[in-house]
Image 1 (cartoon, rainbow, N blue to C red):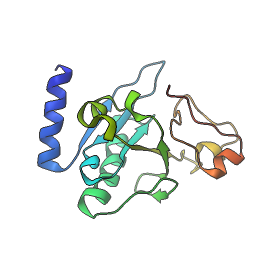
Image 2 (cartoon, helix red, strand yellow):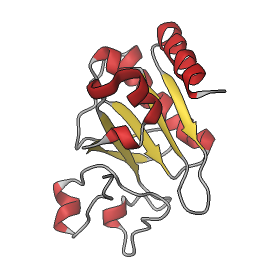
Image 3 (tube, one colour):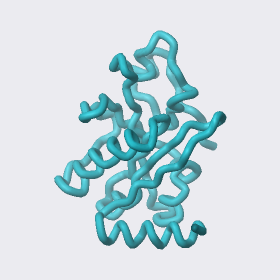
Image 4 (cartoon, rainbow, N blue to C red):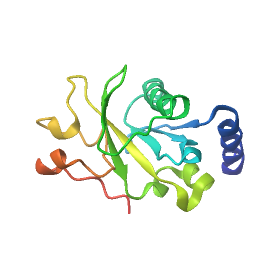
Amino acid sequence: MSKRQLVEKTRLNIVRHGWEAIIVEGDFTQPAIGYTVGLTELRHPEILVAGRDEQETYGLLSEMASMVVGHGHILEPGTELRLRQRRIHLAPLESPRGILLIGHSVYGTKLRALQAVWADDSDHLPWEQDVPDSLTQPVWGTPSEAARARGWESVNTG
């Protein structure tokens, strides 16, 4: 499927369902990512998840998109949520266009995004871990005050 076809399919799914999940497979150099496209229609930032498998990524995105599309919630930067699968922290992405490529193709400069930074299986966010695993889950979003106090910094997205 060409990028143009994918953008058109995404637009149709936004009309039908209110949002679309884009899943990008990872490899040995980059983790898999998934993100929403369509929340911008509600003047809400899109949501990114990095470093989980496709099923869990979709589950996390679906639960958060349902809060926004189905229930009218506004998910704010810095918020922590305990979802069915795990705890997450919402960190604002300063420059989402280089990561959410289809989102940028659909919305251009209107695109805003939050990264759903997830807690590990011991319920620790990256900045709460003794040895943070930035390879599995790069944090592109701006870290919270608590994270910055521990010396955590986001990955530069250029």
